[in-house]
Image 1 (cartoon, rainbow, N blue to C red):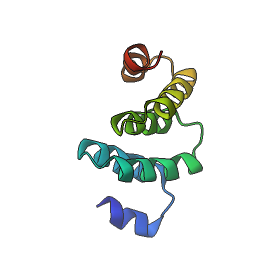
Image 2: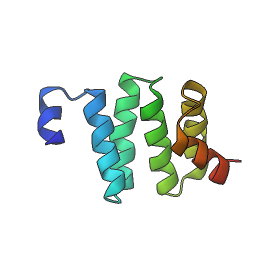
Image 3: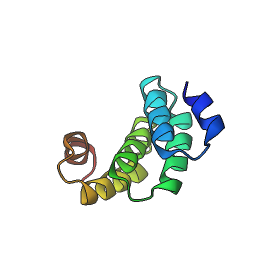
Image 4: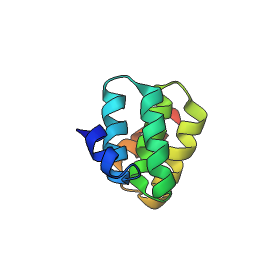
Length: 92
């Protein structure tokens, strides 16, 4: 479904964000990072995209870049519970 939507608009940030989130759930972390990085190119200050990309990095055991993105997301959306939790537990 997401791939079909991306054929129409390959830079649709919401679709890329959703695809990246799906890839994280499936354990396809490199594919998630690729999709979410493309979404970030379109909307570099979207806290949801930044948080999801950071989470993808963390899940792929790339803690440092993941934490930088989580902190960037929290600067834009300090009320995001998942990102606050990740920052507290993993990002010192």
